[in-house]
Image 1 (cartoon, rainbow, N blue to C red):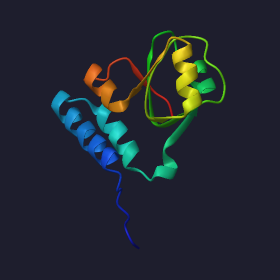
Image 2 (image 1 turned 90 degrees about the vertical axis):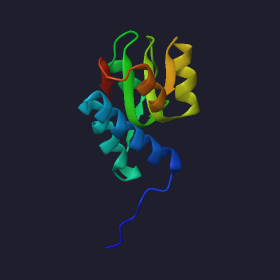
Image 3 (image 1 turned 180 degrees about the vertical axis):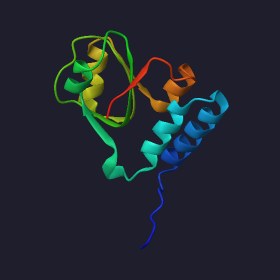
Image 4 (image 1 turned 90 degrees about the horizontal axis):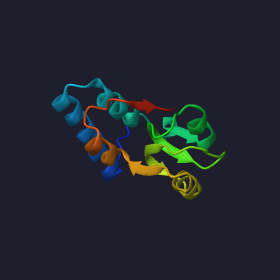
Length: 120
């Protein structure tokens, strides 16, 4: 069986950075995200805004190890970090006074990963 490696340089760097941050901070949270991103792309999370709206509180930090999609609506501000965002999702999140950020940005802002909810 042929083993296929990831070729996306951003994704490879992100996985290495997540593992390094996990070792540096002695926190398993970032290693968990790295392991989810090491899986095949077809297994990445695809989360709709309706799910984020349902499972989040005001100004909470949410991480999606995959893509955020624009189906549904959001009625409160949340800070969402994800690998990718659809254009609709970005517009609706920022329209609700929320913030869209990359996983790298969240890792810099919150090195220990405390208070961050994972949605898949």
